[in-house]
Length: 131
View 1 (cartoon, rainbow, N blue to C red):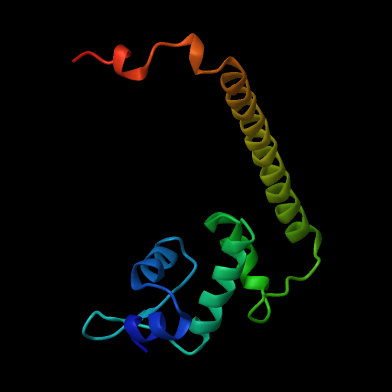
View 2 (view 1 turned 45 degrees about the vertical axis):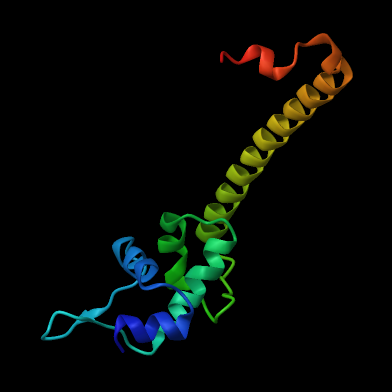
């Protein structure tokens, strides 16, 4: 099937499919005319990629895990190498969430302080902006 058909059947844009190819996640054949040609397994593979991206895995992580994936969801075997890769990604996500939570709390504190201060201590905004 051509890229447009795969795009329709997998529910993703053609540019995403080209990106997956560039990342080594999809490997289409090339027809005599130079067009990408995908076999039937490409639909399943794209769905697996989408699920793994949705879990927060990077393209690099997925390239490592994908050969072991089974089914659309997909199911991954519990071998030590795969578990280590997934645990590493989970740790990175936890760190990012901690940074975001800290930023959110700091911003909420600034908002709270600004609301407590009130507008009566500041000149009207129009007085601050040059005419």
